[in-house]
Length: 216
Image 1 (cartoon, one colour):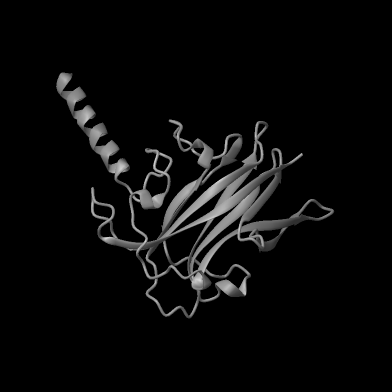
Image 2 (tube, rainbow, N blue to C red):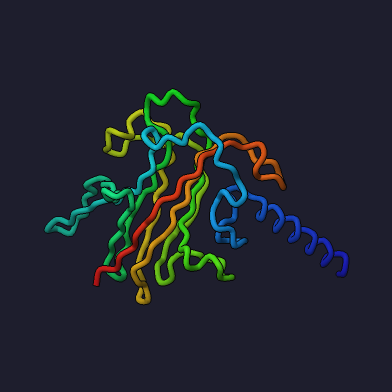
């Protein structure tokens, strides 16, 4: 029995270590790091925002008289000042999509992997595993994905682009309040050296503000 317990303990330790070193970095999850560049460097060739795509789209729907639902397509939630505004009635589920990458015709090498995370800056110092805005339910607060998703999103700016496009759902629950999120994004290529995340990978860091508004 003691031998079995020892094997189980070692297995858990190995699994935990693997998760802690996993990419993307554990900003706001297993540490109190403020942002991605607490561990990584922003030294890649994609720092120019004119060729960089960073957007949040909302899937618009319409109900007919027969209660059938028709998808009307995606619309950008980007505001004139560069922030993103997500408004929802309490209990309403929003179907959203993050789109990250480089525009068609970009002469620089293509990013290989995009990583991102939504963080409520006011919760960074807490010990909670969730650093998302309290009272809001989200099914994908962070992700890391290989570039190569479909660019057929109904927007000409995405045609021929090198992007990741990931859907997620967001809903304000009973206790939700208006909030501001830090949307932290990295376009990367290569692999970080285990234990030395500033080595082996090139990337560029971007940070955008996402405003959550409860419509009562």
